[in-house]
Length: 336
Ligand code: ATP
Ligand code: MG
Ligand code: FE
Image 1: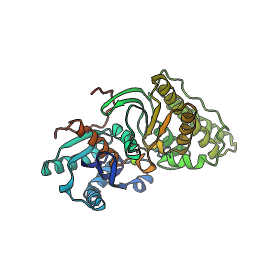
Image 2: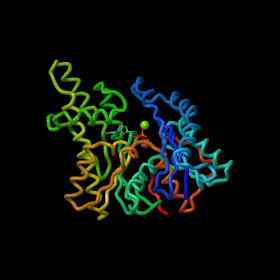
Image 3: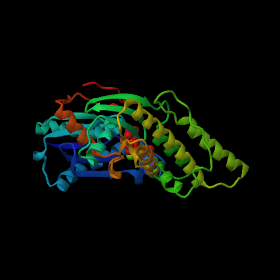
Image 4: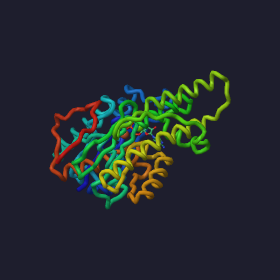
């Protein structure tokens, strides 16, 4: 089954064609990063206008690269939330209109659930049950994925998301937007044991990153005020290590407690090489299998949306055209 996926929740306009939820025939991403870079973050009004400008072209390119036409596809999936409402509406409306005009089933996909499916693309044989850590720009979720369409969200952040902490600290340090890749890069040149930053001890499988963010910012502010010399690389590396350790520790604990010896990571922060390396090491120590998407499927892309859409359609899930864009929705546990 060939599914067209459309993703416009933030600042990437993306369209992809995926076969049977696993094989990517095309995945076109038009990123607006260069535009928003100058403002230090995404400007919602500019983002939605750019999506309107690019959506037809991006979908056209997805068909061209796959060597297919609209008559070849059998379903349309689009992100309906969470995200910027003006941005979401562009892709969602486009998808609904195309599905209606071509009489194709339409399915609305939760963006965070979509991130998980990047793993089913990278590993064509991968099947649930799985422990999944979603770490993105706006979300941090620990999930027990019992089956497709059946999962339990056992932990989330109480305040900032992991990616948000990277972005805010990078912005404070003058490293630009997006901050995650910038911190990842300069941290390689720093001493990660130089500074000890505190991390909030949150109950169970929940997280909190806002205290850590303030601690790093206050520390750097203090150093600046005192005129003390320091290396930004050391701050970045020490901060990154703190975030990585807590993410890995809680995820491994959940795997051991549930005895589900497979861990998958998803979302933009899954592109972090320090996080990937630490998971590889700790999972090997505990005989846990570790899965992480190829770099290009960690951050926002339509292939993961098409994949998630395919597995929903397989379960007979079809959305109504009344489905609207929803800016704030958290992932809630789901039983099939
Ligand atoms: P959400 O998915 O929660 O709606 P989003 O779509 O904006 O948010 P993603 O596209 O999944 O987020 O990921 C972007 C986030 O990932 C940004 O916060 C970015 O800084 C972070 N990120 C990307 N690459 C890296 C990296 N190498 N190290 C750490 N963080 C990274
Ligand atoms: Mg983005
Ligand atoms: Fe995302």
